Each structure stands twice: as structure tokens, then as C-alpha cells.
Image 1 (cartoon, rainbow, N blue to C red):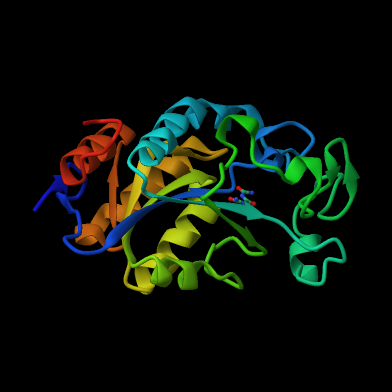
Image 2: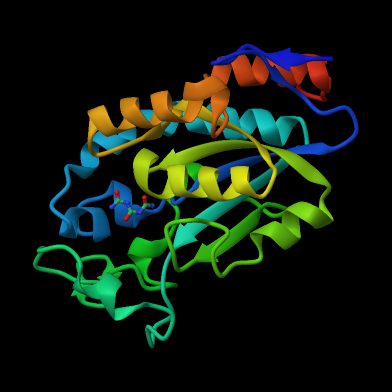
Length: 230
Ligand code: TIU
């Protein structure tokens, strides 16, 4: 059985089902000045560090014809899917729905809500628009995974302890085998990223596994030889 070198122990790849790459919220709102992350008083520049590695991982999945699912945290223009409690949070000058330099903050279709150009989805990839932090809440993600016979998830994106960890916990409770790719996720708080990685893999992998992009690509290449790697 092919495996991926991971913590707390080897991650087994499936024999008769599929894997997917989940790319959480790599949208301008969180990575560029003038978006939601900035409005919450965060240093958005530090999230840029993962972009080249994540791009390489995405390209590896594309080359192997494996499923890629992007998510975007957003709300409808009328904000009917945004609880008032979420709007009230934070003490920044701009709130969800307010006009900012990249359009209305965290509103679907606004310039700031787009995925950064380097990681833009291509035809054939899924994009999930999610109103919550977790990607399963109020979306059709689970339906898509079931239809594709996917059981194993490689989870990436931002921010580690907010939308990435919430999604991984939601997936774990639904029975998915989850691996967080540590050099493809980032937080505004380095210590929160580190703690998240440790809490995920503690207690024998209570929420799942952690590994690196290189190890994931190496393991997948051995599991499923592809056009690109042949
Ligand atoms: N603020 C923060 O760290 N994250 C979010 O609001 N959303 C995501 O993590 N995507």
C-alpha cells in the first residue's frame, strides 16, 4: 500500500477511491491590503510565503488529473447568508459588506473576493462559495466529494487555525482521511499555525496527519503514475 511520509505516522493512500486537494480561501481578501484580513488589523503580507509552494502542489495535482477544489469565503450581495454576529466581530474600520479599495468586503463577485491570480482555478476544478469558516457548512462540498468517490483530502490554504482547521475538523468528523500540508498553509499568527499542526497530529492523529508538499507529491507519484511524472 503506497504511503506518504507524515506525522504522526505514515499516511496510507486509498486502494479504490480517490483523493482531492482542497485549497481554502486563497482570495485577495486575505492576502492583499484593503481586504477582510487587513480590515481585521492583520499583517496580510505574511500569507504570501506559501504561494509558490502551493502553486507547485496545485500543478502537481493538475498534472496527475486529480481533483482540485478551491473555496472562497463570501456572502451574497444582500448579505442574507451573513449572520449579524459575524458582521459585528472585529474592531476594524471596515466591516463585511462595506465598500473598500477592492470592492465590498467579503462579498461574492467583488474584486477582493477573487482567488489570487497565481492560483486561479482552471476549467474542471471546483469552486465552493462558503459563508462560514468551515467548507462543509451550507455548501455542496460533501455532495461533490461523494459523487467523485473521494475519501482522502489534502488540505491547504489560509488561515491555518481558522478556515483550514475548521474545515479539517468538519471533514474528519465526516470520515474523511485528512492531511494538512504544512508548507501550503499559513496564519497571521505563526504560533497559531504551529499549535494547529501539533493539535491536529496529537493523540495519534486525532484530527489527521501533517506533511509537506514534496512528500505529498512524492507519495502520489508512486501511487498514481501520471502524464507529468511518467
Ligand atoms: N481572520 C482569519 O484568520 N480567517 C478568516 O476570517 N477566514 C479564513 O480563515 N479563511
